[in-house]
Length: 99
Image (spheres, rainbow, N blue to C red):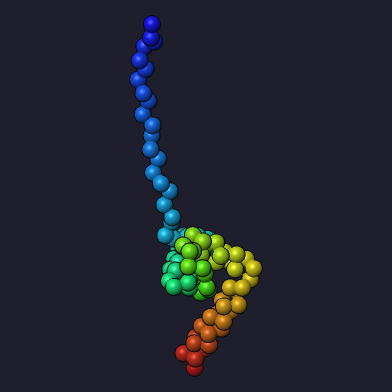
């Protein structure tokens, strides 16, 4: 004597997580970091505070991996030097226009 045939439950299919295209800036906190990775070079730029960096990455890196390396470089202090150079250039341009 067999038991009653049970109805099979439908399994929900969850969508695959997508890699984000914009990231949070460590300096200003806005979600305006855009990253382009071409031929082993990653270019990272914030649209709000104009923080930018360019560095070599392995060919297998995508935007998320490049963002992680960018964050590491920022907190190690390797990007602040670039920032000081750009601020000095901006100050020189402002003073040059005023004279």
